[in-house]
Image (cartoon, rainbow, N blue to C red; front, side, top):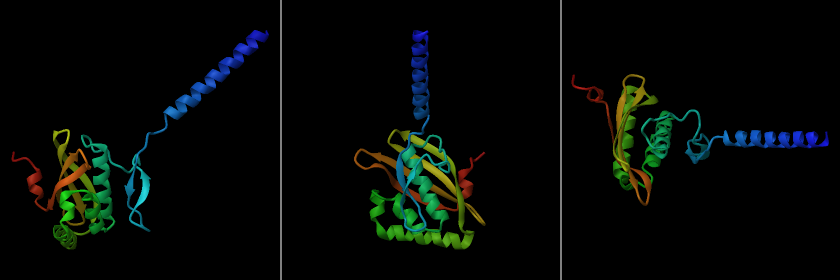
Length: 176
């Protein structure tokens, strides 16, 4: 009887370890990124946040950059949005062009209304280190289309090497 009780106790310990192991394994693996905050412009956030869209075909780091960019735009912080997404980018150093981008976007907001949200339109990846992503922002009156070209630099990681936006929505559709 003593052996049976010891065997039962050993089985309970193993079962408890298995339950703990599976509980820990079920926890999400998280990474941290900078995220908009009302008090200051950054705070640490878990990137597996439910509000982070799953951009199929887009690397996770690029998804975070794009998602945060559009969150800043929707929050009315265009200058900060452009500054953040162009961090470490060679085009980010061109302050005059960045100021023109912000002014052009602000003018579009005057005409079409504030940006309310965004949607992924398409992704074109030509290699593991180069991709083009198209989005639209949804405004009160009319959408804008956005083009981002991302390059995975061996030194800087994913950076924006080209960025444009306009209101030529018809060009998103096929010619058929």
